[in-house]
Image 1 (cartoon, rainbow, N blue to C red):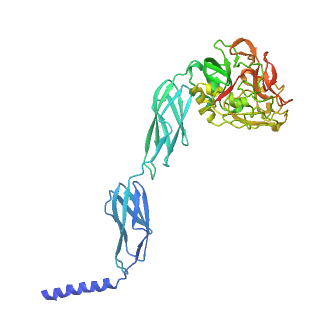
Image 2: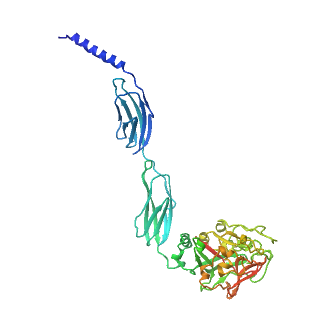
Image 3: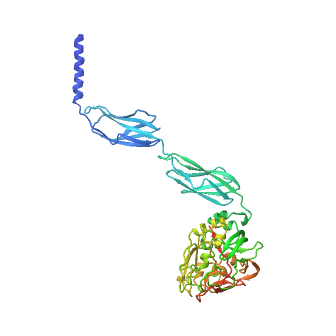
Length: 482
């Protein structure tokens, strides 16, 4: 059979018509995307679900495979981000015997990873050979923190949680690199801590108060120093009525980590030649009740009401607390309430006190000290009378000096221990700071348990004794660095 040209046109048209009739007979499928816009971070992936009633072959493609690629499986499109930018992912479903073809698109925006916050509490730290320093890391990243030392012969480092510990090995300078690992959301980031390791001084005198404080805080004082080691200080100012003008003396180590608390515990005082002294004012061994700031435990009467915590000397002579006792400025009749010290005791010391006369660098290094004493007085000898106070520059108790109880509330000793300096057999005798051949009585903080007029003292022979509260006696403070 042969066809002419007109016949061929007619056949072609018939075929196209048949195809059109067939295509029009196919059903239009549904296609629903769970999301048509998605934001990703570089190197992350995201998924979009879809539903369709078509049985046609499914495929996906990207308008820019350098930005994002995609795969499809079981109704889930997985989009992988490769670089910052934008791309369009096309989901295509081919025609089948039943359904027409269909497609839809997903707009993809890929962003660079978030740069994390990385803040260090210190970017420069000085430590002493054998001592530790710590730096705290603050970050919003969920990446692991790691640390490394540029020179482990000078300093080593370790990290636990967000705390970096740096240990001085030998004198010199190095750097510690702090690294945050890259995560699905955050980029990696580094920071540097510059470290100077100072040579370990030969003795206590060679250390600054800040360095001693750091050693005390670490609980390692006994690795550096010995009980009885001394350090020179200069007192300036008026303490009560006693003027001290560039008065040079030494403080000495009483104990380490007393009763399980970290710290180095110091006591006063010694001369440059090692004579044990107490500060004594012009009223020494005499009484006063007119309110003058002599070294008497209470200035307006002869009583021990309120015990240590409520006595005047704690507040206005020592400056161990920055808050005056109740009804301060007048005689008490049966009781008195004292108050815990706040940090203002060292930052803004009470005027005309020993605290105010201390060198500023020593005062800045002082740590609060929770001590236990009879804080009731008035002939108390019960356990409930022994309570805590927070102090910065207290007196020692009878038991902390003597190691036995003679006149203090018997229950004090259950919360105290004899200071190692005195337990080691060192002399308890103190001499007047202005007459170093004359032994003196010196106050301890314990109230006498048998009456309402006395506090305990150390006698001129170093033994336990007691004195009327309105007598002026020698002043021998203690303090803690931690």
